[in-house]
Length: 320
Image 1 (cartoon, one colour):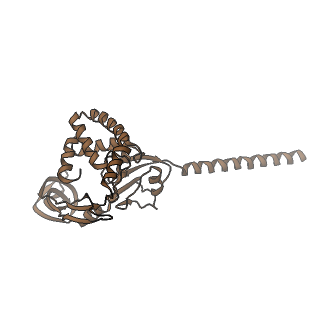
Image 2: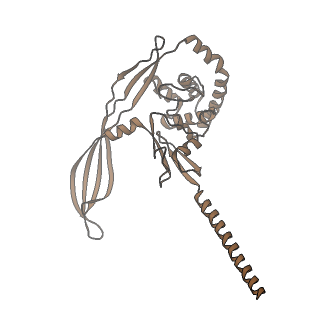
Image 3: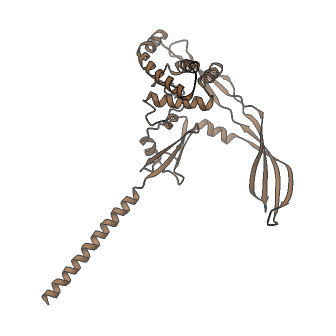
């Protein structure tokens, strides 16, 4: 009897031990499941995107992890305190752009309507619809030197005005429900007029500023320009293009990777606005001249084709 009793106790102890092991393993599995890795897309206001892999879900933590700073003129969706949504996307937009989109008006006009039958013999209503849409204007900042100590004056040189475009669609309805929409044409009736604001910046001593540019930044500028010349060759640009790039970025930042416009927030050698745009080329965009140059040349290539055209635009408008 004693042997049977000892045997029963031993079996119970084994069962309890196995149960405890299973509980521990299950807890570890649940913990590991909670530490899932997210593939998050960060969309910047200029249309560029950055894909990051992170174990975090909070928007603020993800941005900090990737050294992405948000300016006062920008807004983030979802909000900093929220987690990324089901689309795993964080969107950074300029506040003035959001406002302009909200104020955009649309006027629709049906110019033609026909009834047709689909392959199943069902009645489809096909309409030609013209929509008149406002094209939001942009605000351009032109920076000039102030004439007296401490002077800072913002003056509107040109008021902005929205443009107008007419978009024609072919729209199909079934049982009064839209089932298909195809754009037929788009015509700009009136181009938008950009708002131009002059910002007066005080320079306490032109001579001392020039000395800082020539002495403190010359060696670094030479290094940056040597790298930029190599990258211009990779794009197939000419020596003239490179020379015009030197002129353009000398005017923008004096080839200083830490240059920051105190009013607009533009940053770095190419004066990216916002600075976080350059994160598409690397998370070290605040301190790495190669990352800044790579982004700047890519921006010029996409928007203007080459530095010569970018400089020409800058000379005529004050920005590029």
